[in-house]
Image 1 (tube, rainbow, N blue to C red):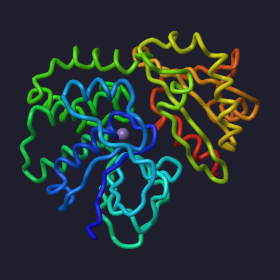
Image 2 (image 1 turned 90 degrees about the vertical axis):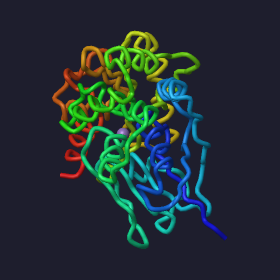
Image 3 (image 1 turned 90 degrees about the horizontal axis):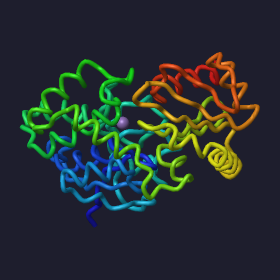
Image 4 (image 1 turned 135 degrees about the vertical axis):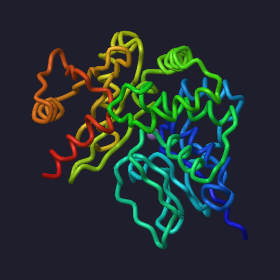
Length: 310
Ligand SMILES: [Mn+2]
């Protein structure tokens, strides 16, 4: 029996994880040395939908749990974020730009982890190393991946490499970057067909921090008021989710991508104390305002990690 290899990103997939799975699959022979098909571990968001439409590409098939497949993970190694039933034996590759989340393997695997702004940039770097000329469609996808994950180069996760690549690829993609990013962010902010539950779940990640389990959702938008108007209902959803998932803490941040700050929803005393201890932030009407904070990966998770593990 031939075992299929799939490439898949995290649950609640974002644009970088979906596009990088598609790209690794497209260039799998060059990147991995064998064939691999792309999959998604949850439905795509409005931003990803828009980009896939732009490049006339079907969204990958959904996979809920692993049975016999070999798996290449992109954009995460956190046990709380990966597709169900992935075992140490099935895991065969990792391409990521996050902190390592504690996965172990049975045998040596393909592993490429670099602190670039997005996995799409890492993929472009690998393609360049292999002298692969990228076509317009590929370039457009990498441009979208960079813009999405780095908030158009404004997030502190942005590196000089991402900046160089974005310029280079915009030429191949024939993209006017200003307009491209504006259109992409409009799609990202769209609440079309999105329930409030979905707003919370859309870009939600769970972390193991010391002995604690912490859930953190973010909603990146050009129009924070469109979400903040429903704050009381969102608070209730967060409370229910915390109980249902048995979490120690749950946080939800509305990221204003135009003004570069985050409004963090505080549902209870535990969360209030946490944000006060870690960020010195005072709670006002069940909210904490984090000025200059836009990146969960760089500006929230490491700070919480060191708090819980010291
Ligand atoms: Mn990413």
